[in-house]
Image (cartoon, rainbow over all chains, first blue to last red; front, top):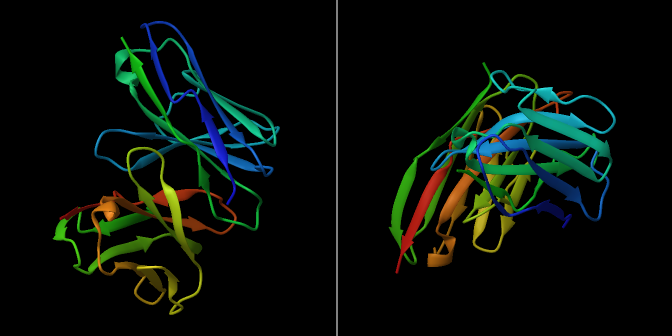
Length: 116
Length: 111
């Protein structure tokens, strides 16, 4: 199956700093990538959808200035959590779909962000 | 409002039991329903269902979609402790490329 690599798997940062999370599709071109956040014992909450070369579409309630998403190429999307606060601590997961006709989504390994 | 609802929220069984997990959806222009298994980290893909009434199987797992009832079930036979996980279903729409996830069913298989 297709492989999506997410990095880092764990990161601890201080309040007020920014953290960048990378999501790469290793063996396919990802037209669309999704970023999710997962709180403990809850399902995945879609934060934003990004299409290569265009601005990300954010879900209602997600601050676009705080969660910067860049999808610069067909194999890489990044999520930057700016001015992180402890309440941003969470599990962030990306997923990617190979193309418009294929709805199967492949997930990265996730990133556990802890803001202290 | 588009939504996906899973039941039960949690389930405890013993090894060897058969379990059925439910997923219902209300999604405009529904295209497909996907099942994922999530253990400690990211979800792993199990099935994608687009046609009603056609069962998909993979080992002890099987799933079927019922478009009339707007629902899907995931069956696991002869459960093993390694089946313990959260099972997520997600639905997507035509021309929208966005996945709606249910809250998941947490399955605990005891020895």
